[in-house]
Length: 209
Image 1 (cartoon, one colour):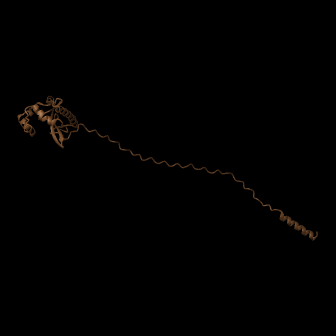
Image 2: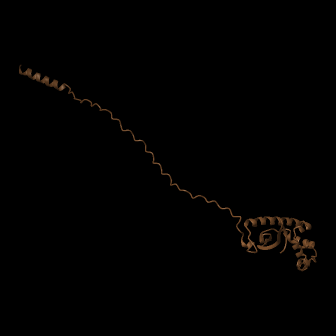
């Protein structure tokens, strides 16, 4: 081979080698390994239950005792400290006397002398008609000013009882004993004696002692 032919062959070989694209070696894809499942999510935390409040035992309610009806009334309600009157007796007597006084008011307002006379004890009548007592009654200025003289029990009823006892009320009782009481009405906060009453059988009557 002559030199020219050799050079031409070398030139063609060079050109051919430059024009052939260079294959790039791509590494084979890496196959993924087995899928590992994600660990399960923990269940939501429940709030811890609050501890129950401390149990406190309330003290038992003590019943209010009923007032004893056997308790004695104040000594200011009796004239003699040896006389024992219970609250029940005082209340019962007060109610009885109050009814009697209300009845007397009704009798006196209408001037029913004979009905009024039925509420008098013999001792009261004798006391009113005592000459010394009548003299004191007739000395009262109102009677003297109106020239009225009390001579009979009826006079006493018309001119003394009717003007002074038609609208009285019971405010307080003082016991002389279990069957004798003094009835008071407060006038400008001062106690005024309106009746002395004595229990005869089952009836309270106007009396003296």
